[in-house]
Image (cartoon, rainbow, N blue to C red; front, side, top):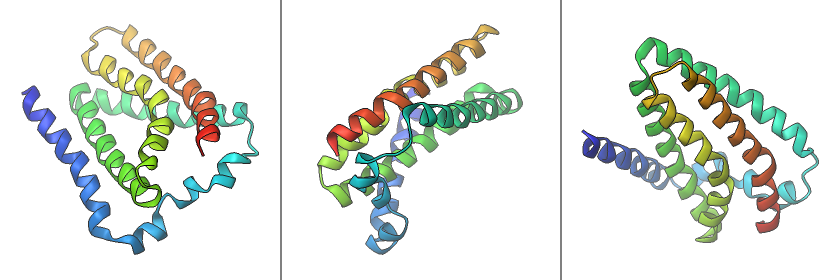
Length: 163
């Protein structure tokens, strides 16, 4: 069963890569990550880290509540696997778009933009899927808060240094 899931996850990641490559550069220029890579936008960011953290915090907590509610309706295992497949699909899209726009250095920027916080978010998914007790919700919320801290304070700092 685990082998089957790995194949499905790999196919989701590859589907994201193929989607960007098949859509062409016209669509990429319209909906691409150009604004994300606009160095002046990242370098001269006017929003404070605290404002950014609270924005992320409320967005991620809404997402956590939705996942917890969907987990009670459809089951934790189904919800976490669907969200992981969607995450890998979107990661494939994002990495491919950044490589097209920035070359191989785009991969480093994507990893710096995603890694600190997504370590905590993916751990929260794992704990949520495998946990059986009530304290799982508390642990997941704590991991999401740690991810928000990483996303709000660590990622922008490194992105300003790299871009």
